[in-house]
Every structure is written in C-alpha cells, then in structure tokens.
View (tube, helix red, strand yellow):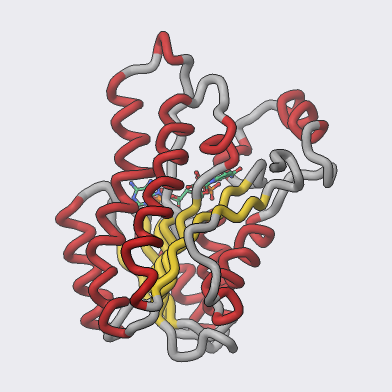
Length: 247
Ligand code: NAP
C-alpha cells in the first residue's frame, strides 16, 4: 500500500488503460477520482474499487472542456481535500491520411489528447504545490515518437504531450513534483480492437517480445512512476512497447 493517503485523478478511466490504471493505483492504496464522459461506466468502476476496500468517486467530464475541467477538479478537491497524482490518459483517434484529414478531426484529437493535459494539469498543479509532492503522468504513444501513416493528428498530439511533459518537469521539479510520460506501443483495448487481424499480425512481427501489450503492462509503469521509488525520475518518457522502438 505504497500510495496510502495519496489522492489520484485518472482521466479516461471508464475503460481500457485508464480503468486498469485506476484499479492499480487503488490497489496501491490511493484514493481515486475517476473521470471520463461515461458516467455509468465510471460509477461501476468506483463501486468496484469501493467493494474491494478502496476509496473512489466518479466525475463525468469532457477533458477538452475548460469549464467542466475546472468544476470537476474543484469538486474532487472538495470531496477528497487534494489531488497529488494525475494520470492524463484520456485519448481518441480519428485516423485519415493527411490529404483527406478533416479540420474537425484534427481539432478533436488535439483537443482531447493534448489541450486536455494542459487544462487538467493547470487546475491540479496548485494542489500539488500545496502538498509539496506531486506526480503527473501523461500517457503518450510510440507513434508520438516515431510517427504513423494515417495518424498525423494523433502523432502530433502525442509528440506534443512529450514536449509538455518535459516543460512541466522543468517548471515544478524544485517543488518535489515529477512529470513523466509513458509511451505504450500496441495495447489490446477498444482503441486497437477495430484493427484487422492481418494488421495485428504484421504489427506483432515488429515487436521483439512477440506479443501485444495489456492494460496491466501500462498500469504497472504508472504504479511505479506514481510511487516513491520513482522520486528521482522526471521529464522521462518510459516506453512500454515490447521493444517495438528502441534507442
Ligand atoms: P480506449 O479504450 O478507447 O479508452 C479511452 C478513454 O478515454 C475512455 O475511457 C474514454 O472515456 C476517454 N475519453 C475519450 N475522450 C474523452 C473526453 N473528451 N473526455 C473524457 N474522457 C475521454 O483507449 P485506450 O487504448 O485505453 O487508450 C488510453 C490512452 O492510451 C489514450 O490516450 C491512448 O492514446 C493511449 N495509447 C493507447 C494505445 C493502445 O494501443 N491502446 C497505445 C498507445 C497509447 P469516455 O468515452 O467515457 O469519455
């Protein structure tokens, strides 16, 4: 229970990687605020955490909406007193080749994947400064490091998250707040479920560990970066990609 007494906010927690990260941080003893748009799924998750002896509450919000972010963070702090761990995980894809990419799909991906991290971090940082302890963990992607055809919007948003991570790490390092990114490779979730088996088999050939990753693979890295064991790590991009990109 290394995170006992800590309060964490996980965005995009209604399913997939975010849900598994919330469960992991709860298992490690943290109180969890779970956030996403789907209230029903969030309620189920909060109930699951509570039933297992943890403490959690659901906050429905669109992470790209400044007013909703402000009011939700206020509500979380009113309920739990503070936020010390932030996992900026909410994300979407709207894939298309650049020639055909609609402005609306560019804007939606940048808003949900990148602007959201700016908005949520800005609202949460004061609480971390007060606690003189903080962990910001941004979920980027291997495609923010190497690009991917058909994902100019997604790759740009995820590369942007890496720059944001390093800038924030420099700004708040002296206040005992770390800011790191995790770059998952190919993880089995709803986001990748739509890909064809042929695409998946080709992708697996590029992965030295020979398998796709699981949400638990990512949650383990989140648990580590949130812990005191990671207190001298900041501005880092931790790859969780089975070796798909090295160097
Ligand atoms: P997922 O199953 O599609 O989950 C995405 C989560 O983001 C959902 O909980 C969704 O909840 C939430 N979300 C989307 N738009 C939102 C919004 N406007 N406001 C609030 N929440 C929003 O995808 P996943 O695979 O778990 O992905 C999680 C993160 O990991 C993403 O940032 C993704 O880019 C990244 N990632 C995934 C992979 C992979 O292979 N799966 C690889 C690298 C990086 P609601 O719909 O309820 O809002």
